[in-house]
View 1 (cartoon, one colour):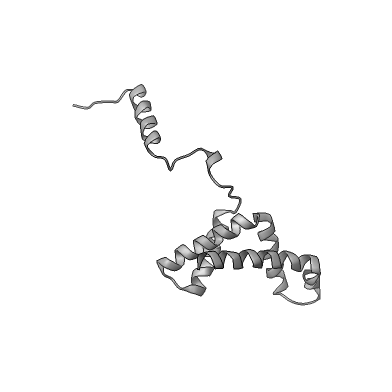
View 2: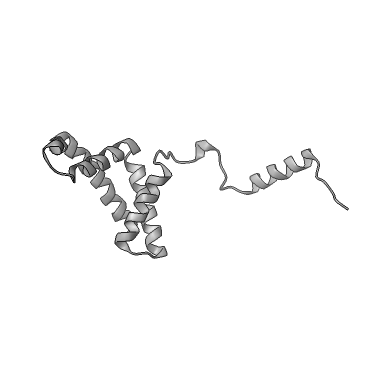
Amino acid sequence: MKTTIKAPLAAMAAAFAIALCPSIGSADDLPANDYPTVARADYVYACMAVNGQTRDVLEKCSCSIDQIAATLPWKAYEEAETLLSIGLKGGENVSWTHNPQMQEKVKTMRRAQVEGELRCF
């Protein structure tokens, strides 16, 4: 014999389950996260490639990108990463990446990375 749960009873059960689970909160309770998931994953992947492929290193690398994200907005991080990428190509066309304003953006990102490493490793 098949039994069905009526909608009000199911809604009450769901509300009760949510009330018992304190880790589920509203969007207002969650930290600001403007870093795309793929950017975080890319950072962790590169970090693990340098530091080792262990669970411990995974946790440290994840912590590090979380610290960077808490310190530096995504837009600033992305600009600095782009400057570094363009600067690696070399030549006259990329000389603008070496001006003091652009280099300050890279330094700011590097400081955030060092802060993440100090807190997590």
